[in-house]
Image (tube, rainbow, N blue to C red; front, side, top):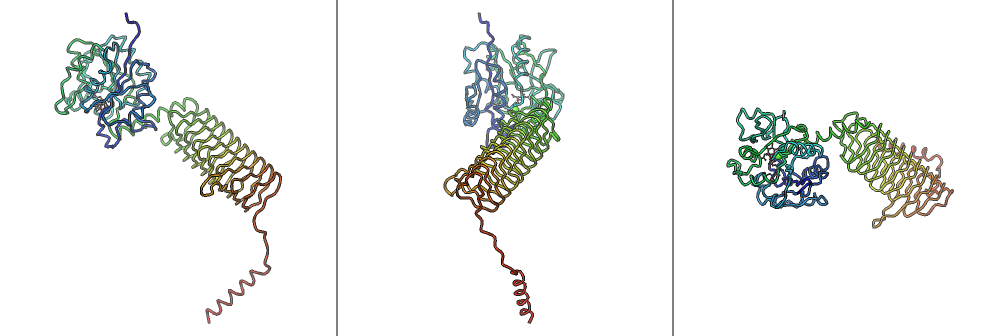
Length: 469
Ligand code: UD1
Ligand code: CA
């Protein structure tokens, strides 16, 4: 006797998605940086099904690539002949399978694992042959209507086929079903919908109910979670729903937002308690932000790690870098990939840093480019300092050791090293290593031409006079 509960999952993703008006498959459009199909594949990951089958169209290698590494197999529906036909194609891969088949539309990305688990429990407890996740739709929509008879569902009527009376029904089909394997034979009985030339999976409800199978619809989740993406408008709305959910989650964990309508936080990002985020901040990729940070407006942080009590001032971009505790970055700073900014460092206005390590307590407060550099602790980088790291062919490293003072408007031509505690005079061009504790100056010595201004004035007066004559 079979004791374990068998589950197979089928994701339908072979539709043309014509309503998107796009050259790429609908399920590859992104919500919150992640393709729709990946959201769906993530939602089923923890269900630990025996088989996860994704039905795709003939020319959808993009979907295969997007799901690379996911525990799924693919099957191709040669022509998009409807959701009923798509499931028929999928079950070819389930010959001999005995258990529950969970079917999901590939365009319903906000569904949560918890809702799916609840649904499967209800399906089992009620001993239904077919269960449907339904929800109450208030907004204008084109979802199929659930026709009920008491506790049971007896049909799903597509929007296009619904009468005026049926259109008033608010309980609608999410496109997520749990079907017992012995019921799948009914797929053969679905007839083509002449108007659309498609086999509607939804027709299975009516066929099964008429034959005395137990069909149930369970109102689960809400309209937002069940959103099916058919149009760009749906895509936009889904993005907003997801943002609200993510931001509410972070507010519950102690993060403050000044204006949550303009903030983007990637689902994989993490933020510590008491951090305050101002408007127009985008936190992308697997970024980790510590506690007690302030992130001022118009800032974008991509795949970076930010320590505790860091202040990021307005209009700053930070990419694939690490910023340590108590550092202050910006306004208008650009921290490019591969940089590490030490604790309590100050990186100020119009400073660009690339693939450089900046020691703790170091300051580069204005108008500098520091690339391929290793800069020690408590260094002062004067305004307008440039590391000349590129000779036209190769990049070279600059090393500036602890406690160095670099005067303003200095060019440091790499490869070169400035030793511990040295000073570099303002306006210098450093091409040779500077010994520790020394002063390096390379500018021309200042000289004075006495009374030069008076002579200049005289010449000018003379020429003006001759012009007038
Ligand atoms: C479908 C349901 C509708 C439900 C809604 C929920 C049908 C007939 N209607 O409508 O009752 O309220 O979802 O969002 O099922 N697909 C294939 N092959 C095909 C056609 C579609 O794999 O030949 C896939 C699509 O890629 C998509 C999913 O099935 O992921 C649903 O298809 P779609 O055309 O979007 O159905 P809806 O009109 O939204
Ligand atoms: Ca749809």
